[in-house]
Length: 211
Image (cartoon, rainbow, N blue to C red; front, side):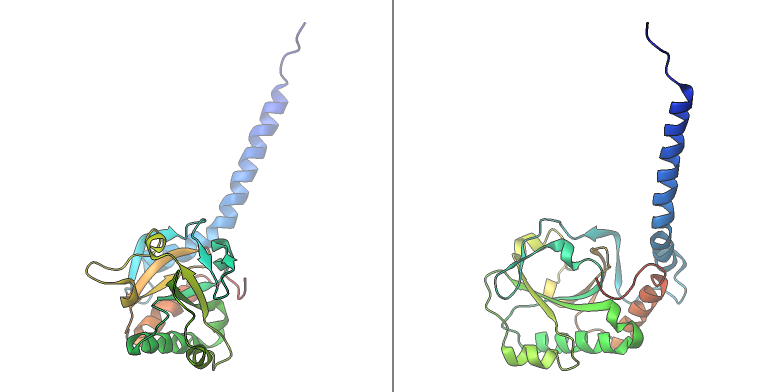
């Protein structure tokens, strides 16, 4: 003779599922609210850069390596805002100018600069950038992170505007690894800083410095 299922057990299971969903919603609420504020309410006018809707998450299997050839997991880039440049290692005048602007933009953020990392992506088979250039980019005490990546694989994540190249842009990636803004490589620094200020202010409730 089989016993009948206890209705109290089913009730407890449903209650447990609702509690779990509520917990997930509470955890996600600050992130959703910050993006709603920036994308929809836009408290200080429209963005200077081009907002990417929907955002594009960094592929988990994106093959990244450091300058010593050691593999770097895509997940290790999570946890900080990434002001990203895609330029060849044989960095010419335009490239150097963009990397200088990258460094200055971060410094202009003041107390919020520790929430932003500088990322420079170069081709997979390229040599390391010139040591003197890397030293110059680190004069403020914060090195630029240089990673190699196959260009054809990078295209699954970052994309230039129509008629442009990847090197024609700054790409802004949020702390969850999602590309969400594209700006000119030679921007109006004050206007691009305005975008960064709004994003950092809107995300202050859930984003902390460091990984």
